[in-house]
Image (cartoon, rainbow, N blue to C red; front, side, top):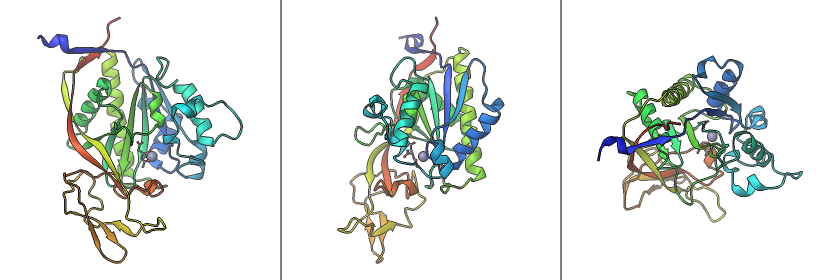
Length: 315
Ligand SMILES: CC(=O)N[C@@H](CC(=O)O)C(=O)O
Ligand SMILES: [Zn+2]
């Protein structure tokens, strides 16, 4: 088979949005987006319409994750199709509004790509979050970004799990991409985290510009961490946590966790071991926003995804 037969021709990506403040206390994305709303020179690219946008302005104003409910879980079909009645939670109203502006989700009118900028309190470094293992455009983009970031690493988290996947703000786009950079405390700006996020976005926009200009991207593979399981803290019968992330696990995002490795340290000094049969790669370890979600960390497994060559479809 000639290699040409394996090229996938994809639609041009003309409309791109950059969301900051989907969570109102994650300061890098909020600061970058506000900066680009003031002066967009840095994010302008040939033939692209790029919209920097603050997703949850009320939460940003209060420097809190959300007002009524987590916006990054609110883009469900039920919410998006709910009638506009009074008294809807603020984020549900906002989701409906954003779906009208950037969607409708799942339709051909939707924005081509949305980058949603997040920060984490865990030691994940620079991470790209994908929701599909078959989106060739995103796989090729992520491959491009990883190469451009080298020697710095940029991990890829694939959240394609049937139960653990959630209805993200970016999911209104044809190609949704999450940027998650840490560690950065909530409400705090760290220059290294800010600059990493800015650099990833620069490479991402460069990729889209190149793609639109007709450049062909050869077949590639992408190392990803696929979401497996959500791990809760040990709890007492009242539901209160009885342990902390073990010091040997704290800050060790993306490092192998093997059967018998320490996982939690109880308040009375006992070590709780990991008892799963397979080696996993924990991430979002001790994320502040996940205490309310009953999640101490998430386990992932490593996987290599292959992507076809792509280029822009000829008209
Ligand atoms: C810490 C944090 O907010 N993480 C994001 C991850 C994502 O965007 O998929 C969230 O839970 O919504
Ligand atoms: Zn967030």
